[in-house]
Every structure is written in C-alpha cells, then in structure tokens.
Image (cartoon, rainbow, N blue to C red; front, top):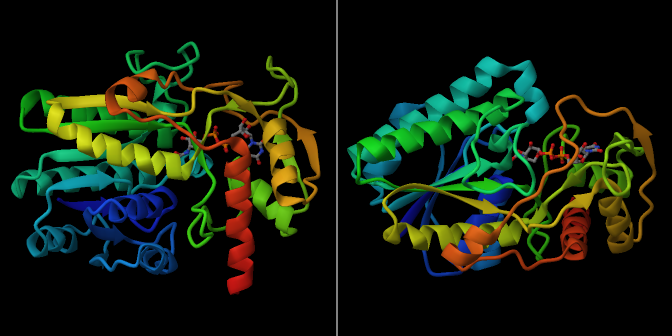
Length: 336
Ligand code: WQD
C-alpha cells in the first residue's frame, strides 16, 4: 500500500510517517513548510533508515498537487495539512477558511479523479464545541465551535460526511485528536512551532530551556480539582499508532466514521507543570493569570470506540510525554 501524507513534515505528520515506514507501508510526503521544516523530512529517514518521495507543495497549487497523483500510484491519503493555531485563526479567518477548506476540496477532487477513495482525516476534539458534556463521545452532536480553526474542522467533517453519503466508494476515518504532546524517543522529531507557542507543552518547554521567562497559567479559578484547565494530553507516538490502526480499518467500513484519539484521562495545567519539572529537572516558574477567552474549563475523551473498533488505546504516560518533549529540546540544542 502507498499512502500520501499531506502535511508530512508537521508535528503529527512526521511521527505518522515514522510509524507507517516502520510498519512496511510505502509513503509519499508533501508539505509547504508554513509551520514545519525540511529538517523533519530528513529526520524521518534518519530514524527509519528509509527514503521516500517528498514534494515541497502547497495544496492550493492544484497543478503541483496533481503532479503527485500523476507520478505516484496512491492507494490512500492521510490528510494533516492545514493551519491550526486557534488564536491566529481568530485574527485571520479568511486565510484559515481558504487554506483549510479549499485545500481539502482540491485534495478530494484529485482523489476522486485518480480513484483514491480511502482517507484518514486529521480532525480535532474542538468539533465538539461548547455544548457537550464530558467525556466526549463520537455520537454526540458536533458544531458550536468557538473559533475559525475549529470551524474548519467541523465544516470539513460535514463535507466528508455528505460526500460519503453521495458516493458510496468513499471510506473515511475522522480522527478527533485531543491534546497531542511529546516527541519521538530519538529526539530527532518533535513539536517545534515557529514564534511564541500557543499551546501549553511547547510553551513550558521554552520556559524550561530558558528562552521564555515564565508560564502564564490562563485561569486558576475553574471548577476543576486545582482550579486550572483540564485537558486530555496524548503522546504523539500513541496518536501516530492510532492513524495506522485507522488506515487498516478502512477496508472494513463504508462511508465516514469518527474515532476519538485520547487517553480518556483529564490532566490539569499544574499537573503538567509539575510532571515537566520532574522529567526535565528544571523549575517552571509560573503566574496565575486571567482566563484565556474561548477556553473551556475541562474536556477529555471517551476513548472506548477506538479501543473496541480499532484495537487501539493510548499507552504512554504523562511522565513519558514530558520526558520525550524535554529530550527533543535537549537534542535540538545539541545539534545547533
Ligand atoms: C491547554 C491548556 C489552556 C497555554 C488547542 C486546540 C486543539 C489542539 C490543541 C490542534 C488550557 C492552558 C495553554 C499557556 C495555559 N490544536 N494554557 N498557558 O486550547 O486545549 O487545544 O490546541 O489540533 O484543537 O483547540 O490547547 O495547549 O492551548 O491549552 O495555561 O501558555 O493549557 O488554558 O487549559 P487547547 P492548549
């Protein structure tokens, strides 16, 4: 089987490339490096000892995008490519809707033209919106999203559901991620956002390495055990394994089906801080600041459907997530 991976140089994309290559699956990589680096393309080969075709290509460039399908016999696609910063999406909604939705439509039209009907889509727990009780279950209504980034994921899931209803050839997995963190044990790939990180774990990593002064904890007065926000953090390598399981499941399904990829456990901001201090041996100074607009107090997954239907569950602990995230920073510093 040969799988096209859009966004293959990204945080989750690169880890999924490793997982597929290590399981004997041929891949074709593609990325425009808007939020990733060519280093990750090489690092995947270094980790696995395997080379693979890679295209520096923007999914909005239809000609370049079609070339990938003309030059490679693609059997399935894992679609990661997309802009994904919640805060930035509020400032730049038109760019987010154009890039994420038009890019996906370009992909789907090419897949249909080249008779490729197997798709794993990188969705997000954000699609559950503000109105669902926790833990989130896949049969809950989606929508009510609170930012353009989350809305693009909701709209694309809706497009995929409608497409699968109209054209029975499609086999589509909608993978709803919770909070991916950590890095490959080699320290050669990991989460390395450009600029000041929006997300908790990369921000803490920068405080630990001394490039940011302290962590600003957004809210200490939530109705949670220690007053800080609660999320379902999942190791990126567990997440990558979930993509392989979903890919293998596609032969057994018709249409589009959602699976939560989470641990099913809620962990608070301060629990992450303390675990990271233990894993890195570095203090993480912080202040309790006002809540971040749009944040929910707590959400985490009901992960039972993936366990039952994909024979997949998250295995790696918060301690391992922090240890691997810190190891990636240390290795990155050593290579500079
Ligand atoms: C986690 C917790 C913050 C930063 C978003 C997207 C989701 C996915 C992951 C792409 C919250 C707190 C954070 C900081 C803090 N993205 N926090 N100080 O908002 O749960 O999810 O990113 O797929 O789709 O919605 O992740 O890491 O930003 O926040 O206190 O500097 O950490 O308030 O409680 P979030 P996050």
